[in-house]
Amino acid sequence: MVLQYDVVIVGAGGAGCRAALEIPEGVRCAVITKLFPTRSHTAAAQGGVCAALGNEEEDSWEWHMFDTVKGSDYLGDQDAIEILTHDAPQTIYELEHIGMPFSRNADGRIAQRRFGGHTRNFGEAAVQRACFAADRTGHIMLHTLYENCVKKGVEFFSEFFLLDVLIEDNICRGVVAMDIRTSEIHTFYAKAVMFATGGACKVFRISSNAHGLVGDGIALAYNRGVPIEDHEFVQFHPTGLFKLGILVSEAARGEGGILRNKNGERFMERYAPTIKDLAPRDVVSRCIYTEFREGRGIVGDDGTQYVHLDLTHLGKEVIDKKLPDVTGFARTYLGVEPIKEPIPIQPTAHYIMGGIPTDLNGQVRANQKDKLVTGFYAAGECACVSVHGANRLGTNSLLDIIVYGRRAGKAMTEFIRENDFAPLPRDADKPVREKIEWISKSNGKESVADLRQKLQDEMMDKCSVFREVKGLAAVRETVRELKARYQNIHIDDRTRTFNTDLLDAIELGYLLDNAEVIVEGALARKESRGAHYRDDYSKRDDKNWLKHTFAYKTEKGVKLEYKPVTITKFQPKERKY
Ligand SMILES: Cc1cc2nc3c(=O)[nH]c(=O)nc-3n(C[C@H](O)[C@H](O)[C@H](O)COP(=O)(O)OP(=O)(O)OC[C@H]3O[C@@H](n4cnc5c(N)ncnc54)[C@H](O)[C@@H]3O)c2cc1C
Image 1: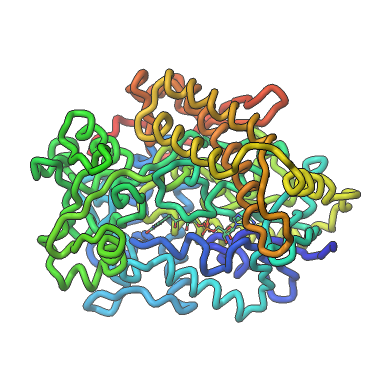
Image 2: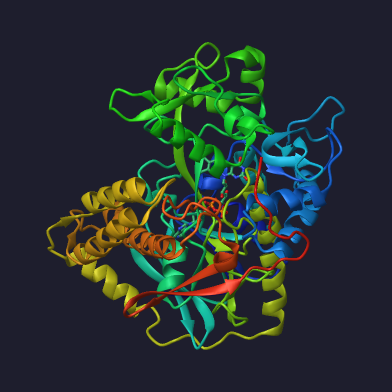
């Protein structure tokens, strides 16, 4: 069936819902989502969303801008970061006004707390900048946005699975999606399409991400000729529950939690004397791995190592009031009582800084120069407007999705006013039908679960916190081998109702494409910057590498091009904390 809408947004997380809210009433707007909207990963965000409101102490958006630029290891584009930090207070107040119940301070204003890398007066000391709703900030934010969308009459297509984006002659004309309930294929013909499909950290074995975060939109855009920017930069969050990767929010350290090694030592004092446990995530994750390497980790029953996150000195009241969910996870999944005992943690793959490149209005870039794709937009974790550069600061992603979701919504509104529908290609859904037919009928020998496991293990072992040429070259071979074996997969369920076997198989294809781009970018980048750390090139190299990677899919494999970084206010300096 062909359905026609002015605007089609794929993804009902914070970025998708925030964009949908900008589309005026009377304009036909559809939001397609493989999950029920409020089950999107935005709802898992715990710690906060930052803005220099100055409700607790003096603060300014210029300080926030500086911190974000420095946190990005100077790879973030400073024009984009200026918009992010300057518009932050207004976007938070808008959320407040449409009903988001933030936690409050004693004056009744939005409460704020400390978070990694956020400082006062250009790095002097930690500042309270993260607004929050206990440790359920994303959950509360997404519910508020979704309810407002429903009130406004946005049409949601829940449990519809995106399978293709229709780009011809550099004009986007719609998407193809499957109704998961019936396996029916539908073409959504649109003037403007926006991707807000979220992250891709399920490429790694230990990850804080939900099962569905496989980089769908990123892989589909890549397969249709769109370059992928800076995908080698993957953030490992220091505090995932040991072996599980489930996140213990940085809010735990923001409230005063301390990391300790096997000797009980507060080791971050040695590495980051100024802000200690609240250094940015890339720094803290590397310090934890260094503790492991030097034998100061605690060895678990499976022989792997962890360190402790100690909250015991915070007391029951603070823990119950400000960190109820994350401490609940420790109780439920590890059987640890955080009021009395430290929590075993290890770094966990958390956030992908790279993605579909966009301009400042969320319009997708067609190349590393100035060419844009007509009618195609992206925002949120799947996109890269490059506010996070080589490393994202905590609480800057919830901010990114509302600031840039809003901007993309506004840009699409203007675009559809001025433009007509471009013709729909004939047989637009043919490639998708052929792919589904192939997977459904294939009698290959390979199991989807086995291939996925191998990919996640290898990426975790060779392409995570520490990287070097031998490991990267080996994992490149593994990805190639797995891509070949993928051609020979089979699925057991051949029915048409809620066929999750089929979805898993398609998602594995998306994971492989994302992994390929991550690994190629990481192999090529012979320096260490932000979350990308090369043992064999341990220094940042601004002379050769202060530039964005743009990865293209070609017949011969990945082709890499580069784009200069936009620097306005802050010249690159050594990053010390
Ligand atoms: C555990 C955890 C805690 C976090 N805490 C914080 C925090 O405190 N502060 C902060 O700033 N950031 C935090 N983050 C990061 C932040 O939550 C995310 O980066 C952000 O919410 C992403 O929002 P999004 O709208 O881009 O995507 P998501 O919220 O992930 O939504 C993606 C949407 O795309 C849809 N979709 C994907 N693929 C398809 C497909 N093939 N077909 C149809 N639909 C599809 C999904 O159904 C979903 O609706 C956290 C992340 C995690 C994992």
